[in-house]
Length: 152
Image (tube, rainbow, N blue to C red; front, side, top):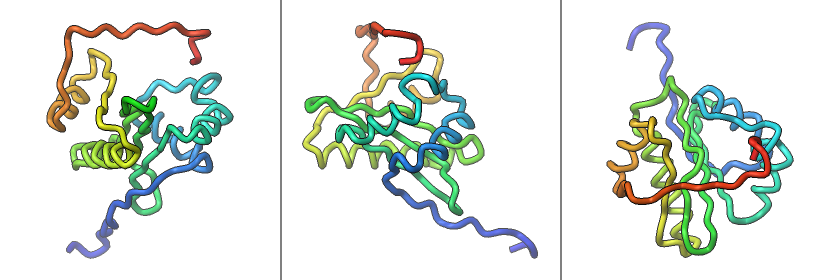
């Protein structure tokens, strides 16, 4: 090793809590996710989602810094991979696949056997990633939503 070179520590997986809110929001911003700080991503809303019991937030940490996160949710019959993000400086190292695997493990432990993800049509990298992880692209399904405001 080159003198003065820093050895990276191992990447640790852990369940995150509402106390990790600031680190999660920081990562989502670094990763380019659209954040709704006045709506569903507000601190109080996030804490309520965590307290609901149907949301598990999983993080990857390296050297004490959050480098990846995924939100696993379910409606008692179908699980969802949500808000998957990896720090741009740590991409293409298998971290997203590891987060998906951990989210699936958590959902399966809760009795969920069907796991899905919504991906915007422009996000080719995420589409390829999920397909590599065994997810099937359904081109015959439309996503519709009704929102009280643009912040939800």
